[in-house]
Length: 182
Image (cartoon, rainbow, N blue to C red):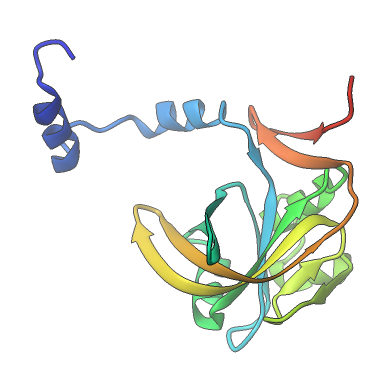
């Protein structure tokens, strides 16, 4: 690592002395393809939904997902109060749903669910009928870090369908990815 020793470099990062420019970081992250999901919730704080791409499995025993939601998003505080969420992984044909819940379609948040078909499972969080798979979850832990809340969510029910492609966000655009041979 040049003149700086590994321990010294880690100390500099930990102390904030070395910061990666956020625009360079965002450009680099645009090269990391990720499944597109709509995270939904319903309960005491009301109904919400947000398009996200930061979702991953933590463990299968107990089945748990990691879900990141921007702290400035209205959905963030609603999910925290409701204590439940559903991760709806979008099928390749769901680009308009991704736009709807990202806010880019211009539809007010309180009207978004009237534009799509949905139901519920165990937690009462909306399950989008067109999702390739939906993970119905209860919040286990919340970690606040930087601009986002990291939700550790225990999966209590799952519903899937036979969609042949999923929606991926890569290079700042949506791409439909299929297992079908080209």
